Length: 637
Image (cartoon, rainbow, N blue to C red; front, side):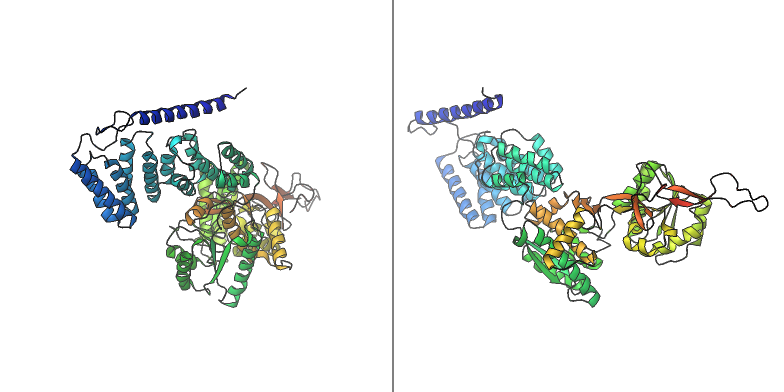
């Protein structure tokens, strides 16, 4: 029994065949009479009604021939002038439609995007729906829209073409594939939902969408989409891409291009040592990637001098670089962003402050909203609704505080007071006394690692824990170095948001194994190499998805979701690199998982016996802080 869908396709194909036979028969029956207009066959389409004299028709044909010669020679102004003369002065000529098509092409070639789009849209309205020139008009219009920064509209124009007018392997096929690379996952999904059925140009769009879905970590959905593309008729390169997605391999195609790593390889000794560690992490990531040696990485030395960065970036762009790793310094990243002539993304392993208007500029060390967001969500969940926030008056910690405050208030919590201190301060009496007076549910401490010792010890001195004030902090409190350096007397019971899998888990283990395989030595100081590994891995993951141009790499980078890296589980969201964070509790210099909905338990020290009677007063005793583990040692990790 023939399936209904197959029967439907067969009927459509049969109908197209009958139409072709009918047109052919009409053409044969028209004969070779001398009448100026054939009695049978499709009428000539013109831009205006009427009939011109033989001399006017000859003039129009001559102008069009001259316009075509000028266009082929690259003299686009001359081509526009000649074609526009036909369109404006001789619109009833038999070649006026072809002149309008050439005028649209010439305007596009000259960079006049709006004019090209207007002419192409007019052409599409004039031509019959089944005219072969509809494909050329749509291609011109789509290219102009793409160059105007409207790629989604460009793809929709091409997908609206009747399937019979789309030749496989033609200009429209190549164009829709390249334009689809510029679109994000959501845009591609929306276009496919709205696209007419049956257009073969939908296949490369489906595969671009499948690549974005795979990049976001949903391998099974990507495979289903790839199989749908095969079922829809993927052939040649498209079929090879679909098979790679089905088998979860790196995509085939041209060489992935070049990456430039800008590092202070020849700077001060301290810079050189750290930069060498970053370089080794990058090299390990490339060696471990399925792309392997097909990726070219140019290591460029800025010698720790931001002024040298602009020239390095300009040279790299000229060599076809599709993405940058580094620079390491804030100022160097700013210079690099300004020196770019395109949209090749910049991923710095270490910069703290990023340029405020730096589109496509990322850092593994800039403000990570994951920690304050996770902490605010947890506080709201367990009922810590009234808090005081203490943070430095400037720097990344101040931004973390703002993110926490906005999220907690969005969830219905209250911030009783925001306290600040000058960076580098060591005494916090006024701030601690303010907390004593307010008696909040929690004191939230988005602070840098170097401030934890002073603030934690003074919070204990002013007995905030015995007053029932829960201490909460961002990632610095979970840092292994901080936990080992600060007395457990000050940190037990503190709740912190810590990057998932940082320093452990499959992503970190994969990094260590690849590093030691590459360099044949034990990794003893992973910090710099881990930063280089993660920065490189983000760009490599995008290249593995098939992105090749700077525009495609920039668009695809925003789709990375839940990548298991060495420094945590990484995503790119809203122009930032975000780590997935777990909310954990510090106990005995380790990290403890709290049960869902639970918060640290109060610790009570027994009351001393009455000096006169020797009787111990009833009750749980006096408060003595918090503990993460009510019984036993708990799952410390």
